[in-house]
Image (cartoon, helix red, strand yellow):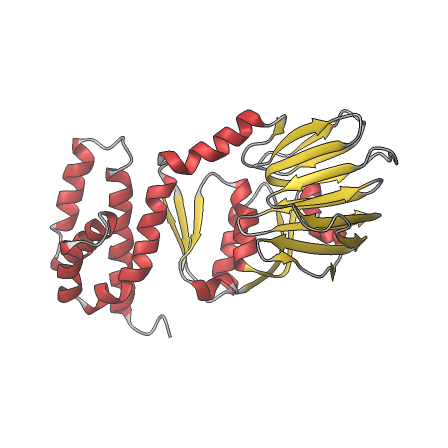
Length: 316
């Protein structure tokens, strides 16, 4: 069991503290007092020195110092792979250029957008409505023949005014959703897009594929991505779109999906350290204005620990 060896907890605590120091020292605001404080901390004991050298090695890419640390401590050797994930995420959380340029570019090109933790109800030019979840961007492309919307990032629920001669399309990633008069949700994630139908019927297809697409009805959802369009699955659309009511409702949802949703409502970067954790299931009802309660539940109900650092949270 994880709590059977007190020395292991001590090693983890020192490693966490050392990584905390690395984040502070490389934040761009550290001064002489922080550098002096780290020097004093690492001189506290040999174990502190090993933890400091491990954190430095990981931060700089596991070079020669990393090999030295592995030779000195079995405990350090057992944590290296996990800590590599942590420090890599810390660097990304500090706002390195490529990580933020693409979202900023999308927001500049968008007609409507929302920020972290913000939702917004907008009326489109034809009278249809789009309810934008947090971290969402939409661009419009309306013409006399069709009503086009591109979901550039995030999630939006559309309530479409019927116009039989001018269909309504939502493009997202490598696919599209077509509706004439209906309400449906489009959720764009890193690896796939999920379309959930609240009312009516929609067709979902891939760019360059069949024009007919896959038919999806009320209380069904379909997911598509690089591998194609999956078969529609039945669900409770009201629960799946509870974010409109300020709630997050998860019923045996994979932790990876939960974190993806949670990330929209917090500025802190959240990482899952290890593929086996991503499939762990989460169940619960939470308020959107309290994302930390989701992390608390994860720590209390799953075989996982939540490590909170400046600008970064790691589930391990």
